[in-house]
Image (tube, rainbow, N blue to C red; front, side, top):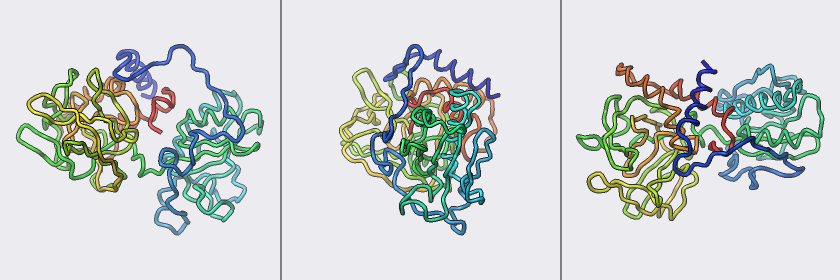
Length: 382
């Protein structure tokens, strides 16, 4: 199954070629080690564009402790000098990035494994706001403790998708990740209360069903009604951090930071992660007839809202509230994501059971995880 999905992903990339706003690399990609004291990205660890601010220490008696997951990957050595297994505990996002890095390390240096010397911390051995206390940070070496490798290890950690990597010490590198809530899990979504537009009028996204036809855009950028095939992600009870955009014509759209919005450009549209949209960019908003109307973004704010819904339409696009969005997230090319999701759209059209999925769709989850291995970090949301 995994091999099949890898081939599907690679086939999608080859089949669709360069999409709008997309540039492919040609030939082998050279990666350069980080130098001592360098961090990537070149901003503070607690910046929103890096790993984000701390949310508070997690103790064994804390309700959030159950959200930490143990990592028993046999390809990773854990120092565990406390003898409590604490170094194996981390957030799900941190675990996923660490497992990806472990594979990269074995590929880079056959016979060498990744080594974790510090993970979740329950003692007071770090600064007050350290992300180690939340299971969002790890300190790493290689199993052979060859310090000449640590600059490249840091670069591999960046490529693996860690949100902030610091070649902090001659004896280890430090890596950290965003919170689960700040990036969502598996897919970009829209909150409860968002409106979609059916042929019979507006409809709350909470009550959207498979088979409903909603306003979307075709490949030519014209407004059309497109069938909802399934949901890439759906959880009415989840609380997530969203970004709310307001345009000059009072059109709005609210979505997770990793979701792709389709913005107006000279040749139709260009895709952008919601997190990267700025005041002055132009949303494509619902106009008269089949024509979309560009409108300048005049206000952006971050909000916490209940519910997450990611409907998948046949066209791969959807009008939510008043603005156009892709159905996809996490990958910075709408055309590649749409091609890679073609098997799911094909399967969904034959599955006519009315039951709605809960959580991330298995196909999408597998595809996103495999994307960590086959796509460079420059193509992924981080």
